[in-house]
Length: 135
Image (cartoon, rainbow, N blue to C red):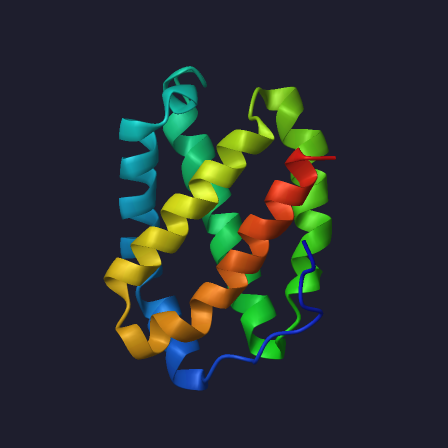
């Protein structure tokens, strides 16, 4: 799988919509994750807080990379996650599932013209996470 080196930077309007919808996107993604992924229920009593933190990290990193159009900036974060999160019982497959949920929520929450600019970045993250799983 070849990943693009760059993507079209998002418009200011799409980034603003993304920022404005952050709480709604994260809350919906956390709820679906907690309800639908068995691993989430096995993360202990602080599972919800861990998942919220993870989605906030994804959201802020995504916001930064969309401004400059360089998804490869997320490479270090995803590589770090593969090594570090596994020590906390969070598998690369769990990360992949949460990224897919996050993508689906953005498609539902943001207007189509804004989501269409943002989704390629999340697709890039999902594809990179799949590469990490297969290595």
